[in-house]
Length: 487
Ligand SMILES: NC(=O)c1ccc[n+]([C@@H]2O[C@H](COP(=O)([O-])OP(=O)(O)OC[C@H]3O[C@@H](n4cnc5c(N)ncnc54)[C@H](O)[C@@H]3O)[C@@H](O)[C@H]2O)c1
Image (cartoon, rainbow, N blue to C red; front, side):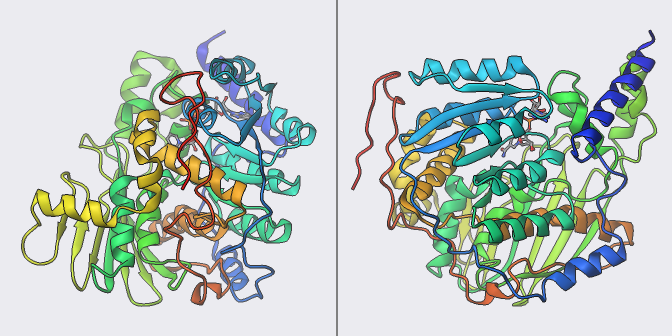
């Protein structure tokens, strides 16, 4: 059989399986809402909020029973990190492919914990959620599966934590909000970049007023993933390439947006009002697809696709008259950057291009002064688990701080740092940027997922008040339990 035909049949099989399971297809024609859909999504903002999940504390869970879905590149690291956290039970692991669940289970048993139950197949995750009495479903699957899995988890009595972006359409953003409010289950998008060291420092400094009134902030996801996108074995069934081949906008806004949105108190004192988005043409993906197909017919189906522009720039204006700029470029050969620039009436912080810099006037401050700021304004979470997080790893430690904080909040009955409104607001930039790009960068209004509660919601918590009691095990000495000092 020709590989073209094989590809066609494989596509068909995936597509029909997905349809049968009610799973959204890989990449729909457009994520941009129609004018009517956009209007409907905006109208939702004016309705009465059913229940405010911002600041909501769910009942305490002593031992957090977790089920994981998706064990490709990202998932096993999550299993590994959770295995170091006390008060966690790794109950079940699921992947489409059984061997991946089995491989991650080895991480569990190697850590000295009992083996988890394994689930697999297209609907194994439903079976897992139905059978195991889980407290938390931790989702690390491709983008188009996040919403459906998070919704199902909440409907079945579990808190949901999903990789980014948690939703690709406005409808899905609203479904998540309404389901979280109705079920009173947390729905957290795992925006790990909010837990990076400089980001937490600048958040605390912004909160203490060191930058004055914030006026403008910038974030980005600039990461050359051209090779990964075209890698046949790097990830499952070319889902990244399919997304990039069919949508034109900012497909991955949350790493850049999350940390600056927290600094700007978005959904907690301010809100995003509207955006304007512009994309360059595609100069890299279409050409690469052609080159690859000339060598390997596997890539034939990716030739001639409407690839998204290499660089997307989206600007957002907030209700309080502040501006945010977010960029997305995952193809250009340039160094990694999330920019992370926070600029106010008294000062500015900037992380990329490195080094990390802070200024309160014309000159960047000296290294010794930056060190002093770190000493003075590092938030409690970093002081508590920062060093241990560096040892565990996961993007330099931020992934572990995120997981530890999530578990600590669940165990102590604290509100989560990132709630369903943050998840929806940060993710909705995907469809809305595509909408603006498709209309010559016209401005597009952003729904208020908090339905007005942003005016009174408290800012994200920066202390460990009421918590900080969760230990870390086995990091220093594999297999041995080392309780973290709790004070
Ligand atoms: N926050 C970060 O720093 C970060 C880093 C990398 C990836 N990610 C995100 O993590 C997610 C996963 O990315 P990845 O690189 O691991 O992709 P991947 O393709 O390597 O892994 C996805 C896994 O999901 C599994 N899967 C697919 N359908 C399934 C189903 N129906 N049931 C159960 N499992 C299913 C696949 O078999 C695969 O093992 C994406 O959302 C990605 O954007 C985030």
